[in-house]
Length: 404
Image (cartoon, rainbow, N blue to C red; front, side):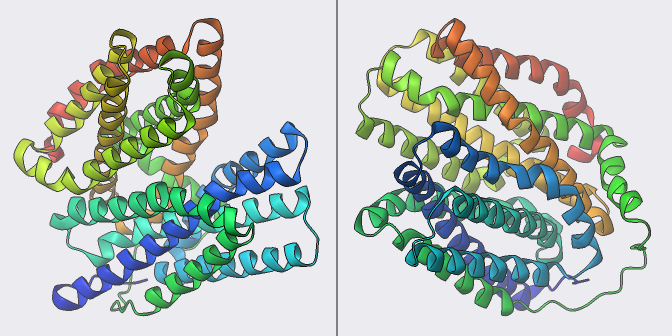
């Protein structure tokens, strides 16, 4: 297992991790934007196209907890290297299949599923490695900078350059994606952490080890509250994103170009929420910041039902993205600080399983709400759900001594 390195070496290690994650996120963003375009060109069936999305989501449900066991057993940086190299090779293999004319649903599902498996391993290992790279007092700042750069690279730049490169040559985004994985791997190789012996990590039966991470989250009232809250937030946010295109087009009359601007505004809200989390916590403290984010999401979501101008929809989306990322980073930092070091990987895997598992449920529920009422009502119901979440969780968050 890797150990903490302070001072100049620790700063250098974090910079390499920051660059690696940012470049990898940029490649992911290009691929996420280009893959549906490629699928719609190659496949004629809507069910076949949607199966690509299923292939992207499924690994988070299947591998989050098992990977958490291996992350706690072995060197986290080496596992991240493995994830990058395997994703790079998978992207290269897929490009060659395309070049030789083997372009069908099986190849696209292989690409989506394989790369998503690597993403599960990389992201869980990355989250678990942060406490070994930076001091506990710097967790919010480090997580915020990572999240900001990943959002900027993936959600903003990747979403712009993916379709642009696709229009030049269909394979170009995937070639660039493969290159970013190998560049990320080179950066990870530069990270130097002093080895430390962890006497608490004992390898036993795989299932019992996996359950330790789950027990860690459910046996601690604060961690359980953050985990369940994260699940509800994830479901509401993904549900709102799922019906946003209907809301923007039907209710606000936005064109496709303006819809892209709307998404960019929301992404910038996430970047701002990421980079400001340490400062906000310094001013208000963790307890108030967590609760304030709930209230901001609730008010912004309900305001969509009342305010009819497109500019207010952009403001609401900015606030929602800001608060979601701000809350998520702070929650992650608390988890990294609270969970014992030898359980970080398994706890991260269990948390991701719950969080990602709620996403398709949220998308389905918001789709039903939009079908029976309208997208404005669906957004508002999401805000009411977050307001109820605030009422239920505020007593725990405000009075837990560890958050003072």
